[in-house]
Image (tube, rainbow, N blue to C red):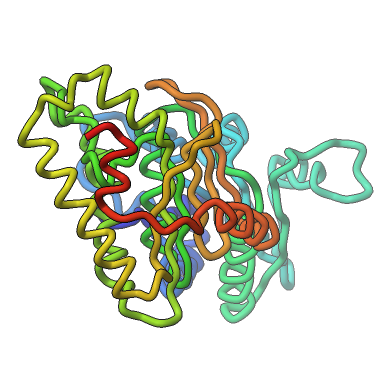
Length: 341
């Protein structure tokens, strides 16, 4: 199984005057399992430093800007790229002490973030001051934690079929208590859609989804505090079998029967805390509901659109609705007969 990618933070600052502060920020990020991106950690590059900076800014999840007495042209360039890419920007400004002074360029730059200023800073900029090492560590940890929380509160959308499956896979991996799932056609039973593809790698993401789902079931069905419901469309599945002439594929049908029997055995062993069911009513999908995150497919095809959000209330509502459709107890033969097998 592929590991879930760590959230990454690009650390931007003058490398000379804030060398020590960069080290502190790097360690603070590592302490909370966030991947820091700093220029001094870059491997040998086959592109110019400027190109490398901007590429890393484009790829990061959060942009952390440390400022003190000056604002270099390359730091400003990185900041402008973060704004252009609509990255969340956490700006930590080191307070002046004694006779320390800021350059005119930095003074002008900071004026836009003054609440009394007429200027309008980018919407996604969070501004904090610090002076001591302890204040810097606290500001990094608290700012990053607050921004990560927004990732889960705010909706996430995807624009491709593979991204939808990757999103669903991540929900399965993080789910600890319950998992409710609807698919038009059940990849857990039919297998990934590469069963007829010339290029099996084309649907590797769908196979990974099915593999992770199967592993979650195997690891949890004996635990009394876990619950699982897997629903699929009877009509859509029967149509898939007929259209692709899968009813004539003896090997595939043998695998379908084996997987279906595996699920029915788990249903019995778990006291029906783990259930499968067929739906007769038309319904959109797929839909996946975890402990407190849900994701649904809005448009299908390879250019699919899906949306996900962390919302306990909506997840509880969806679970109640899906439960109302998963009560009928069917045998393996009942399912096979309904699918025309």
